[in-house]
Length: 468
Ligand SMILES: Cc1cc2nc3c(=O)[nH]c(=O)nc-3n(C[C@H](O)[C@H](O)[C@H](O)COP(=O)(O)OP(=O)(O)OC[C@H]3O[C@@H](n4cnc5c(N)ncnc54)[C@H](O)[C@@H]3O)c2cc1C
Image (tube, rainbow, N blue to C red; front, side):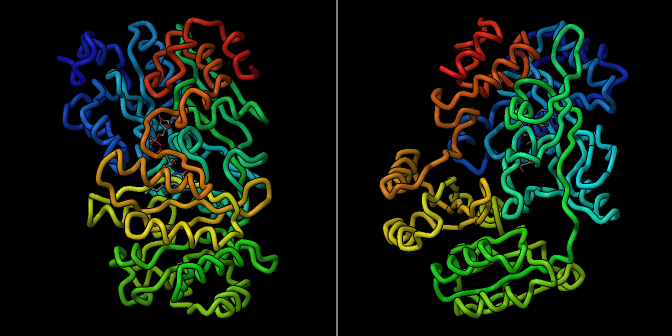
């Protein structure tokens, strides 16, 4: 069997045999399919990554099978990329160096549901975790809008926040991630437990410093969530209403997002359910808080177009409201026009609506705003995931410059390096643990710009760079 990636020289047929009894996928079409994630949101990443493939997929069903995969990969010095649902946006799970893809989705048991926590194997889909939790009166404190196909381990390794972050903050905030178990890529793979602050050594490391086998995460009591959609004549009134909902002491929403009217024109499934040509606010609000919600919408001269229980939403054939927020908004536009892309923008002062209006005036038709409200350190913040009409990398950089000139932060969505902003953002603590748990540098190493510079140092020397 020849190398599908064209980048490795090992005998993959023999390697597949050695992996037995682990299930493998070697059909080139399927291996190529599992070599992709949602990097194609970015025309820049699409160009860089669309021809990068792995050579073989292993689907371990247990920790023992996973250990066997990692042990063999270590012996044969095979590059490894761990894959959950493959829904990342930055090519995190693309095997740039070829090699073995380890798919976690067959390690998917929900292990324990307790008072305010869930323990699950890393490959569990979040939709299944949430379904199991709801039977016990709980739900995940936060989850991404991709919960139907994304794994809980992939969220910890590749994600950052989601539906629920308005109430309980980003994943990285204390109390949200309680414990992780991680397997090393060594001659004899070990399983290490991380808890407390040490969880940050593995969180958002894109699977480059170990394979997460099990997670213990915060849960919150489940509520009768009402899926709300309200429309406004202007973006700024929708934004102000979203901000008031996010800040309100009288309601406990799980989600509040505001979408430019021009973006809503790309939501055919909402046609006839919300007013055309209006800015849209989507929110998840507990049933008992609906009176307050309606009051805020009316105070801001908006109209509540839909307020649906889950059963009512399903009866109308409507998707979850969170399919119109976070990066699902971009997906809705991309479904009809592949020249769209997006960016990740930090809003410096959530209350400064005038600054957002000035920015929107200057951006005009090239970038259409869409804000998510969330909480960081207990304070309401906003991030913008605008639709950008892409022409060239240079034009994108000019647009980035407009944001920066207005004082907004650009967290570039068009790089497949975990450091994003470059070496100054290297997480040396992640890399020190990579050296400890992946001494041969087999795990997703191409995603770190800094790894090549530190890979020959000791873990302690790499750690020391974190405080320099
Ligand atoms: C439409 C859309 C909406 C999205 N919305 C959100 C959102 O609201 N919030 C958010 O944070 N993200 C969001 N994302 C990104 C992504 O869906 C989530 O982060 C998701 O949780 C990733 O899970 P996954 O199983 O698909 O991971 P994958 O894409 O398979 O993997 C992500 C990264 O984690 C690594 N990895 C996977 N499993 C493991 C493991 N067990 N151990 C170690 N490393 C591992 C992979 O190597 C890769 O580097 C969105 C993406 C899309 C396309």
